[in-house]
Amino acid sequence: MTQSIGGAWQVDPSQVQAFARAVQQVRDNLNAVRGQVDQLAAPAYQPMLGTSPVGQALTAKFTDRVTGGEGLLAQLDTTLAHLDQFVATAEQAAANYVTTDTTAAESLRPR
Image (cartoon, rainbow, N blue to C red; front, side):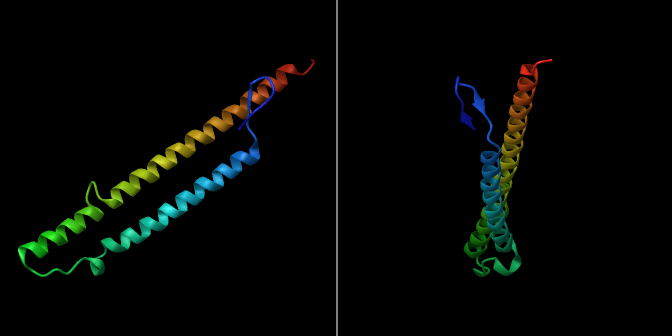
């Protein structure tokens, strides 16, 4: 968005498209990280620290940090949900600007 003469805001479609590409790149990167974290949650990647109580406690702690309710997977899911909400809000705002600009331009046309 750029500020035009007279202090009004204008939506530049190329800026909106660049913004959308940047957000998609962030989303792709987060999904790549999520895929790697999913692999960490697989049994093959679980730490093998023995059968002692300490080893079992450390294994449980690792698993909880990756897959628990407050773990890395949950945090990534929350981040992706917030990103989706942010994108939807930005798209709606851009659509509102375009609608407002179109309506204003039509109202200025001679009849």
